[in-house]
Amino acid sequence: MEYLVKRSAITSEKSACAIVAIFANKRLSDEAQQLDKLYRGILSSASKNGDISGNLGETLLLHTPKTANHKRILLVGCGKPNGLDILKYRKILNSCINTLKSTGSADAISTLTTLTVKDQSVQSLTRMHILLTENIFYKYDQTLSKKKTPNKLKRIKFSCSQASQLKHIKLGIVQGKAIADGMMVTKELGNLPANVCTPNYLAKTAQGIKKGQGKLSLTVLGEREMKKLGMGSLLSVSAGSVEPAKLISLQYRGTARNSKPVVLVGKGITFDTGGISLKPGAGMDEMKFDMCGAATVLGTMQAICDMGLPLNVVGLVAAAENMPGGKATKPGDVVTSMSGQTIEVLNTDAEGRLVLCDALTYAKRYDPDVVIDMATLTGACIVALGHEASGLMSNSDKLSNDLLEAGQSTGDRAWRLPIWDEYQSQLDSNFADIANIGGRWAGTITAACFLARFTKEYKWAHLDIAGTAWYQGKNKGATGRPVPMLTEYLMRRARTA
Image (cartoon, rainbow, N blue to C red):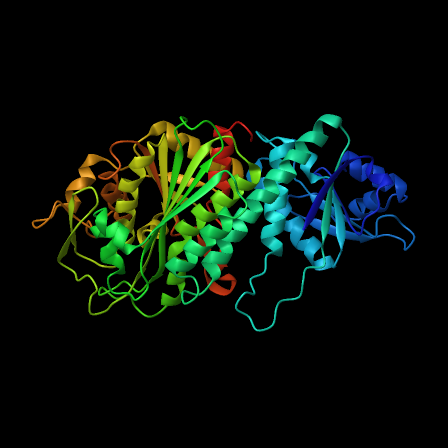
């Protein structure tokens, strides 16, 4: 999709579809009033006749005469004037773009990026417009014998009337396209079947991201190198699989070498059978999404490279396949992590924390300012928070608040849960320093408490994305979350948001 911006009156533009706003008091936006005057009251008549009231997310498609510069006009209800926040804005865009998609328009001109939305700039609204457009028009067809019909919509032009808006929309387009492309990487990796998207495939994807990026370097550790480093916990997960584990490190240097980096760590279980603690068969196909944390890291690294953010970031991917087999780890086995702590593996289906703990220990070598890990870690998180919010646990109030604010600003929200010391006793073991599960209660929290034992030397946050990384049911597929939250957080650190 191509995105453009032009400072001009909407009446002087030509388009297959002009998108303008109407509010709940049936007041037309300034741009809508201009079109209404141009087309002899077609918009105000529709409002007076009760065809549209202006309620939030309501849409009405109007057709103009064949000789008109605007073949269609899409009226979008925006609710109460000056009553918009980012969540309402997302609802408006979702409704608008879905209607636009159904029209078959080849191009459109949108005035929605200049709406007044609480705590949002024209730049951020432009980013959001692009992200939701790309998400709605996304089609997966990599493994289909017949490719899906290409989208008819090829171009969206953003209209503005002020010079100050022009430059901010231009920057929002660059950022929005970069983030959308990063989400595309994340979604494509998540949607690929596990016989294609293996740990080695993730490593090759990282190589593709590095190509042509002068600020990016790549290191890929194989099982021999990981064994030398003492990563017995991570390697215990891949022991039953013919697919060798990989530890992938993408290092982006966008500022001075002595500036401490943000380290992003992603769980990359390319398929999770549960190992010897085998999962039930129903729905097991969705365990190809168990690498969405890793996919998020790769997508985020793609986005920050495209934006050229002035900060240092390291992306770590702990990739393995969890399979039963003659060499697979068994319940009751004790393994030694890179940190030296021993772990009793009471359940081989609690494998995500076993790969993450060694990656989190490895992260220390980068002398990080903060470390953020993301993982489809626990079903308990879905029970607690459903599919709306990711679970957030952290040893730093500031880091937590920054991530929560970034999530709220993008609609990619999280909710903080405690990791109090009182929960740690649930991980006690008679045979090792720590058990890898903590019993029935507070499963999301005890999983984070496990990881917290490996993150005491730096500021750290854990995002449990089990409920937000993919859709279930007929719309099954990866969501691309939490790339929007992470990129917003990084842009704010770089002061480019």
